[in-house]
Image (cartoon, rainbow, N blue to C red):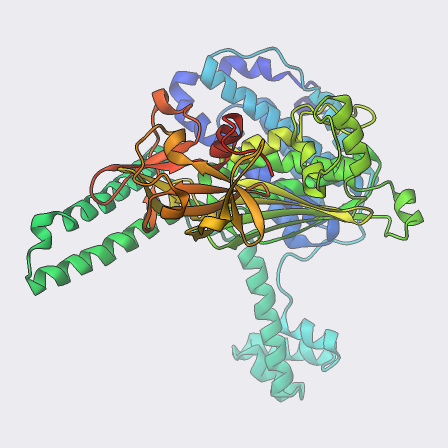
Length: 623
């Protein structure tokens, strides 16, 4: 065997050539770009599994491996270079038609991606800590697998990487024979005329047929060319981007302060009014543009689930197919990483608890392969992500039995299906009969709920026994701006997120009552809803204490409703969210603050926290 592949040194043997002080910037760039390349490879390789002969797809996978090989060689990262080179060889042979893409090759390339990721993350550890643990990736064994695969799958003929000639297309269509085309090519070499004109004249082919062939050739040329092009983009430091967005937010607030200054309000200069209107339009557009810089397509996050479903189904010995839609839906970039873990937990849940074994599905008259639908779309001021499966649905009897065993509930009477289904979000809850590689330790759905609530979102369940389940995640469009209704309680002003508001009413005397053991209630559309007095919760003086002289805002959270008692509604407004700082971050019932138009601070209410505090203080109990 050649010297290049005789010994695969562990990554640690490459350690002396990593000069952290000199190459830190180059290494940081290499880590970032290589991880992006590997994630894209995983998406493309799974597309290739569906279309093994797609040469454009093979080229799309070949190029990033080639880039990783080249840059790692330049940086003297020998093991990464070696593995990328060997994997690249497989793809090179596949695109030349010497190797047929099989399931074994797909698995091998995915495994190579995993090993490369671990190697690259070890380089990141070197940069961050200056130390590197001894690790052996057994590259000898891995490269032996690659060699064995290469020796086992020769193709019949090389693939074409260039567009067909016009003459070839016409011959394939049967409108011209090879001999006539050859004569036309000879005349073209002698005269220099256009081949299409000669074919029309000498081969007696109709102009329409030649035009069709030219269009087909152009389409093939465009397809090959487009595989090598990429969207132009500029990489910007995140700190600079956040600073820009903060400054634009401050600009909007300052403009509002100037406009609401009493001295400015008394000016009756028409030109000044027009200039202020123009300034307002410009700042509003600037704010929208700045906020759009935070938005990125959710595509990259969703596409990671393709491989997850494939791997989980293989481990569970089940068959599952993932159908996706809405990958171009944009989401706040700060949410992209935060939403990944909840999605992983929910996909695991669908595979392990939802999708049945193939023989079980067949007995129920279902296709042997289960389907998971992953959808993303924008609805109002929210991003909605749905995870639906056609499995067995939630087993409510099993959920109640486990909940009783763990002491989560004492009495099952009167529980709605909504409340039963939501028991799976309790900490440590699991209906798995045994612990597997996929799930069963009870650390899944409660983590999902907490992570989503941290993003000011909520998760809902719709289960259909025997038919499947749908989990719906609703998230705000951005973490920086919230659409809310400003309410007044005494002299204080609060912002209630519009997404939780059902309606606003002034209750009549007969609609107010007290129920023994449940506190004060307001009758809204025939239902009794607990009343929460915000002035008591936040210990402030209210203008009105009689609900019939005040306004009541009906809000909903996780299927439960409560009435918030307020003195007045001041209007609807988009507000820029500001952190309350470390000393107030644990105040329950408050999600943050904002600077209002007059320069004063308004507090943004956390409805989930208010519900919890109200129930604990016995101001209102679950109805």
